[in-house]
Structure formats: C-alpha cells, structure tokens
Length: 84
Image (tube, rainbow, N blue to C red; front, side, top):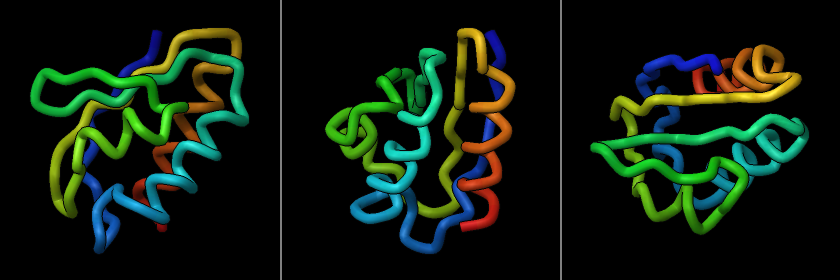
C-alpha cells in the first residue's frame, strides 16, 4: 500500500467536474484507491463517495492505493491533483 498526504490545488476543489475527472482517472487502474478527509475514507472510484467529502481548494486529503498498479495510480492521481 502506498499513501500520500496532499493539498488540493484545484481552484474549485475536488467537486463537480474535477471530481468526475478524478474518478474517471482512478477507474483506469485495477488497484483499490481511497481518499480520506477528516477521518472519513471513501472509494476514489465512486463519484458519490468523492463528492460526499466536499473537498475544497487548499484542503488536505490522504490518497491511498493498494494493488498491482498502485504506484502508477498514485503518480497519475497526484499529477492530476497538483496540475489540473
């Protein structure tokens, strides 16, 4: 399992369209991927789960991945969060 704490750089946070794109990116990988904020952990491949976290700009989340392509998943999702 790989984990990383990230600060959301997206101007609108991880809501609506950015959340949908994030979930779409997460679904490209076979690993289990989770997002955690304030002790609430959700499946990053679920749009409803990600939206339920109501992640705003400059908020800190923890990204976790476990599985055969966990490092590729982490690298891709970190790039998405930091550069979108």
